[in-house]
Image 1 (cartoon, rainbow, N blue to C red):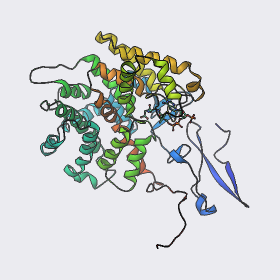
Image 2 (image 1 turned 60 degrees about the horizontal axis):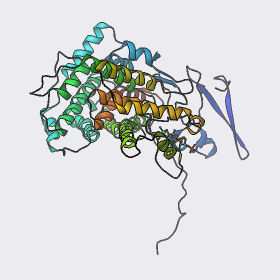
Image 3 (image 1 turned 180 degrees about the vertical axis):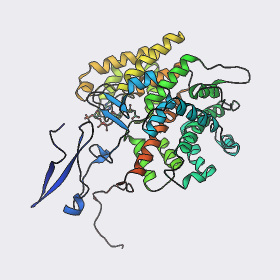
Amino acid sequence: MPDVNNEDVAELKIGEKTVKLPIIRGSEAEVGIDIRTLRKETGCITYDPGFVNTGCCKSDITFIDGEEGILRYRGYDINDLADKCQFIDVAYLLVHGKLPNKKKHQAFSSHLNNHSMIHEDMRHFFDNYPDHAHPMATLSAMAVSLSSFYPELESSRKENVDFKVTRLLSKMRTAAAFSYNKSIGHPIVQPRHDLTYCENFLNMMFWTPVNDYKPDPVCAKALNKLLILHADHEQNCSASVVKMVGSSGANLYASISAGICALWGPLHGGANQHVIEMLERIIKKDKGDVKKVIERAKDKNNSFRLMGVGHRVYKSYDPRAKVAKQMCKDVLDQMGLKDPLVDLAQELEEAVMADDYFQSRSLYPNIDFYTGLTYRAMGIPTDMFTVMFAIGRIPGWIAQWLEMHEDPHGRIGRPRQIYTGPTQREIG
Ligand code: CMC
């Protein structure tokens, strides 16, 4: 970090003009240059494709130190949260800024139960999606549909926060399980009040009239941890989309629906599905030859990238991937399972870590490298992996959306451009 004070200014010389731009510092000593007056004073804008250097807000929610591999929600380390908390408490923490006490926990929990069913008319939507529909498409549609079933929540941004949070957290989980039931032609299983948040999801996924499924405690514990790992990641692609949509005044459900679509992409949350598909391809097509795959990923004439490797912010081992890797081993051990894809993933990771191409670019396994393998051990189908990520990320999206609306400097998101097309011309 540069050694500067809040009082310091950055000087920028453009032609003959020198402008002074204030320096701002975060609570973890991050430094930013406040360029809000730049265009007014100089006529220039900044050029930063992919927003690699652009801070869009000040935020109290999540801190990441990508160099040191640190991730904290509201000041709490991700390892502590994953070890000691329930997902719903972490959701509460992200949205409200503090962990709930026992009374608040119980109230939040029963609130979630009370809002877990989805409207009967909405349930019929599922009948009209083709069986092969990707569950992320269905989930996004369900999220935006909530705004037509519960339009009263559009009226105020700050009021009824708990109401909005519980509706989204609870109903999206139900909708996700319904979309799976539908895709395999099974009857829909309703949520139950006597089960915890994670047990309920597993029960809705796997209970059938001929199989009186009881949620496996190993799976419920793993799911709890995975959802915590997914819960927020500051200004990532999907959170930025949620905020961009919300900045126009669109309602929370519409904003979250857009975030789900952003998360679906293979460079973002969709990577967890693509990791498994990549590993399966390595076994089938490359006969398990990891070296061949590494060479393909390094080949600049080939668009192939190693899925689950690399990150915009982490230039060291993703702290979530560390937890996910250990958890994957634990879950397989506790369930007495063996999976050749896990051995292959470990071999691939070792090859990545030893290779100069990946070392020189600080490319390490990210969260998606091992999470899919754990979901797979739990019996969750591959095309549901990104849905799991989305359910986990809902509290983060909500917290970021709310914070944006409370920001006195918040404005509609509207980047500029440098136009490089033709200058004015005549028709004919
Ligand atoms: N395999 C091979 N090369 C890679 C990879 C990869 N997975 N990731 C980055 N690189 C190379 C890239 O080609 C570039 O090389 P060069 O400097 O020679 O041009 C360099 O590393 C920097 O990459 P970048 O594309 O400029 O980095 P970025 O910050 O724009 O992209 C990323 C980050 C996550 C999109 C990228 O690392 C990637 O495509 N990874 C694979 C997809 C993936 O696992 N995504 C999940 C991310 S974590 C969860 C989440 O965000 O939801």
